[in-house]
Image (cartoon, one colour):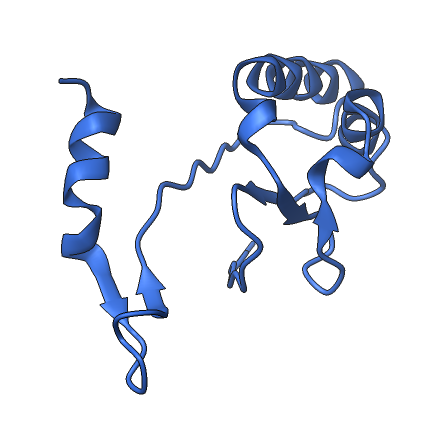
Length: 115
């Protein structure tokens, strides 16, 4: 049994139901998040490497992704944006840092990015 199968079996150990209807709604459910730090990520060649890594992730898991955001105030459907557009956001971004989130379900996500 691999890590993901074990995690799936134990996910209810990390799930807390909503107070008013715990059987039908989750208030909190633990998931997996990956954060990457790349030294000198603002350099064009490093941005391209990040876009290449994202393209690989997209090829492996893109069919499972549904909702997410680059701007947390504007959730969007993953497949409304092409792979090229996702990569363009990475390579042509106008700041030193970039956050995004993509997942299987539309959800309220709280991310904290402290520099």
